[in-house]
Length: 300
Image 1: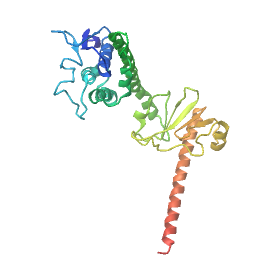
Image 2: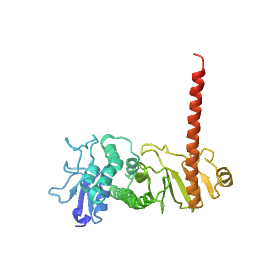
Image 3: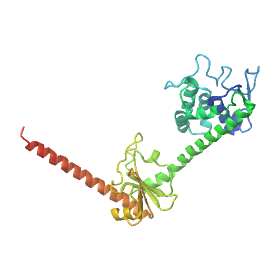
Image 4: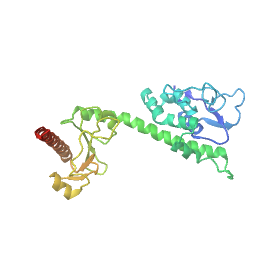
């Protein structure tokens, strides 16, 4: 059965001022079933046949006492309830849960608690101003189209990350010296952070190759190995002279990224960065040892 067949052709929500919650509900349902008609009014018609959301106290409303709350304590709004029901028709279960955590819950919290949310604030701008002659339902449709574009882009991005796993796994299989070389630039952090990789190299959309240091873990930007301080912020001939690497032409000021014209030089830069890092560690250890010896010789 196609996804659109699992969602009826009619849906109903409240009229009047709209918010991100009811707008994203309508956007999600339209994404699932492009033929759906979303009606708006202040009261639900008797014996209405279709999905009713954000009004009426039913399965996809959250204004009544005893409305559902997530295990983490975050209350559902209508968008969250619809996503809970239909999200796995769009994304795999694990991805659907992550999307709820990273996106849906923030909109739900904003609707339930009034907490600040930039997307909610943007959606509110689609409401006609107090002295406008604009039709509120037309404005609602404009907001829904905008919200639909947002979720479409997010779904595409999530699905692209899933496809990237194949490319990353291939690079991991052929990695040498803890350097993963990607055949094409893809989102890699999700799959490489937590491995023993120290650098990732990929073709650059500007030509040549980029090399990046791998973060220690997913909760920090601190790298296992950064590119040398003497390289940072340097470009072109100056960087080539300092590093001795022929086509190395850029090092980011924070030391997380380099660019070179050839794959060979990108790999060389990563290897040299590690050598310098290890040498600096050894020097630091020696200095610490000397300090301890000096302290031992000091009279007490």
